[in-house]
Image 1 (cartoon, rainbow, N blue to C red):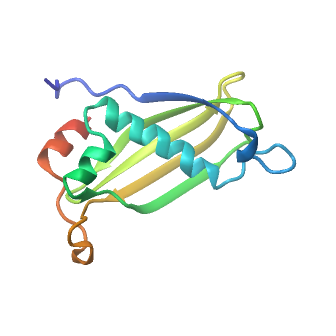
Image 2: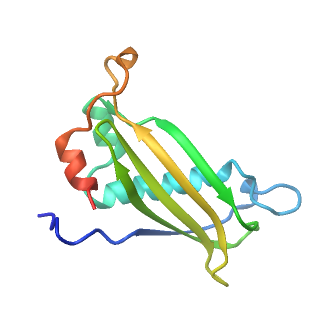
Image 3: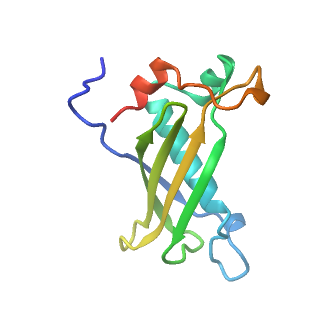
Length: 142
C-alpha cells in the first residue's frame, strides 16, 4: 500500500553513452537526452507498478505535450550517466516529470529536463486530453 505521508524517493537510472548516441567528436547529440529521460520515466512508472504497455492495453496514452531541456555540459562517449527522475506535478489530465542528468565519474551536472505528458484516450485520439485515471494518479503522487 502506498504511504501518502512519505514522498517517493527519486528514481535513479544509470546508463553508459553508446557510440551511436554521439557525433564525430564523441559528444552526445542533443536529441538523445529525450531518450535518456524517457528510459528513466518509463522505468520509474514500471517500478511503481504501472507499465506503459499496460496503460496502452487499457487504452490510455501519455504523449509528450512539452519538453524543456537545459544543457549544462557535454556528455561523452562511454560516460556513465546518472538520470535522477521524480514526478514534478500532476494535473487533472497531465503529469510532468523532472530529470537531472549527471556524469557518474565526477558528478558534473550534464542536463536538466522537464517533460509534461497529456493523458489521452487511444480509442478516441481526436477527443483531446482526458482525466488521469485515479489508480495512475495514486501511483504517481508524491
